[in-house]
Image 1 (cartoon, helix red, strand yellow):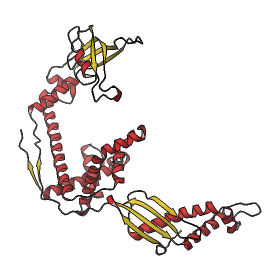
Image 2 (cartoon, helix red, strand yellow; image 1 turned 120 degrees about the vertical axis):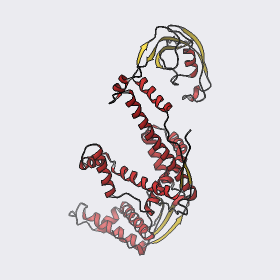
Image 3 (cartoon, one colour; image 1 turned 90 degrees about the vertical axis):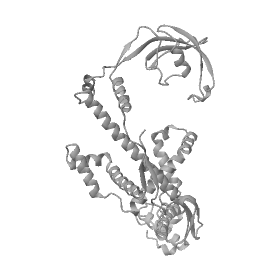
Image 4 (spheres, helix red, strand yellow; image 1 turned 135 degrees about the vertical axis):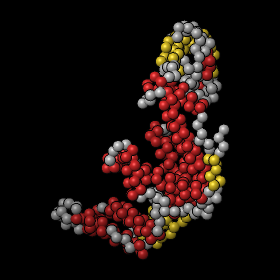
Length: 424
């Protein structure tokens, strides 16, 4: 169907947050023509007793299938009129149109209204002139020592202890049962790392007072943030028996440890790599802070609202597969709780896209080819192999976005003053 937009009466109302409502009137004559077309089309593929297939009179079709025929014609007409009206008004919805009202009587005009969101219009009045402090990215010996300690812990061996009280960092095996349990429950056995919050604070404190093989009765309180809301603030008396504990025996801090954890000849080589990785991470984190602060200043200087449909889509992406596991009311609560964060994130995304577009910073195919070649050379591969792999994994768009964002933030940094914080 080809609908002449000049036959339509169209009015658009602007609402908050880039919401638009559009009312469209389709003349009765156009509706009648569409109904006749639908009848002819149906007659051509209908088979009724006394008529050959394709030779059923359209008027007979209209009399027999009037209501369903009219509904089919109206549905098709509304869709076509909506698309034509959008073109006429130069509107590009970013959300699915929601029909609010349809009014139609035989031989009368068809009137319908539909709501949708449109892309926000961002007006940049200030692009720079901000002062942003870059956090220190210095790495000291204490940072390196902390990583070395974690490496030793990851390569340590758990050795059973014969006696003594458990301490934080030990793996403990315990039996816990309720005192005066009428059901005669013998309790349950648990094994966990002490001091990591795997058990209630009162339970962990009680375990620290017991030797291996010892038992004791303790009053345990359920904290206010306990997952089971019905137990919050409650207390009960339990018996705890320490069945055993294990201590982590750390390997010596020497060249053998370095060889064990990677392609290192000496401990000094391992420490050098750790320092290099820490410095790289620190610089990336520092740069991330600068980017975030620049965007915050930019949004404060150029505020704009975002459509609720975009915020909802972002929130749904954050929630992910959990949506299907949550009750409707709980899902609504979760969405509301992350709405401010989601709205801010959408604003940042739109601002970066807008700056990229207005300043001609968006990555193109040639830019992606260069990046693919860099990845190929780094991994001793070919550009074709890397491209195919990235395309299969759906990561080409991510590379395009990374290149674009890097350009945008380099541009923004050039518009403002970036100072370096003093290392402490």
